[in-house]
Amino acid sequence: MTQSYPNTRLRRTRATGWSRNLHRENVLTPADLIWPLFVTEGSSVEEPITSLLGVSRWSVDGIVARAKEAVDLGIPVVALFPNTQADRRSDDGAEAHNPDNLMCRAIRAIKQECGDDIGVLTDVALDPYTSHGQDGLLNADGYVVNDDTVAVLVDQALNQAEAGADIIAPSDMMDGRVHAIRMALEMGGHTNVQIMSYAAKYASAFYGPFRDAVGSGGLLKGDKKSYQMDPANGLEALREVEMDIAEGADSVMVKPGLAYLDIVRAVKDRFDVPVFAYQVSGEYAMIEAAAAAGAGDRDALVLETLMAFKRAGCSGVLTYHAPLAARLLNG
Ligand code: PBG
Picture 1: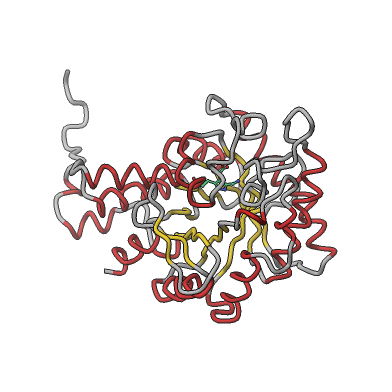
Picture 2: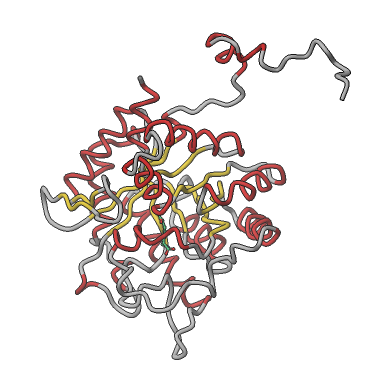
């Protein structure tokens, strides 16, 4: 084939470091990262999570220390997930709206120590509190009922906001919950508390280590396919996002991350809202396993995958690698 533009050499701008720096289209900084943290009871407790090598659950004092570490690293937000004591889990997940539950104690402790130096994002869903591990309330057939669940999620969200949460992140995938939570926040005077909805959350095999971390994995019977999305669907994700924006979401999330970058891009192209992705526990574990097997360089894999989220259109990424990535980026 004859070359019709003989002087075009795309390698020209790649030839030197300074030129690559000049032509880089996307940047990744610690400010793009949200660090998920697991909270457990006690004091001075660190419990390593076996399926999430390198990640631990921390008691509230340790969580505060991690939040301070995040501030020092330039990470703007931590996301909290509780490992609720077994005897506080119940069919209705009532511990979710106990003002003194583990989450609320962690939120208050971080806010007392760090104030507005850091944002606290809290997950709204019942799975860390239910004895059956599902995100909502079950009817006699074991089906997760929508509207009654939404009513409980509203109480959970208000409980978190009253403890000082800055971003409420409903991860339950019930219909109509963003609107219900927004209304309750407004009426409760929490007008500046944001909602980042898990808008397109898929029924994924990548959540396994997370379920170990919050202790819901062993309890879960069946799957979450009656509320989380079918991995085969893309257009439906756009409808989910459209609905959550209409209901008052300030930002939306796609989850998992790497296997769903096409969804991130489609959402970003269609809607003028900040989009986030969750690089979930199974993705973290995959990178760690590859590094441990000598199949790739951990630092490079981490930064490359995080940059992929930026390129796909993300404003930021939830990742368990946040402190490592921030350290690398800070040089
Ligand atoms: C709970 C929730 C899950 C995750 C975040 N919030 C698990 C699930 O839906 O079963 C997964 C996060 C991860 O795997 O890192 N609703």
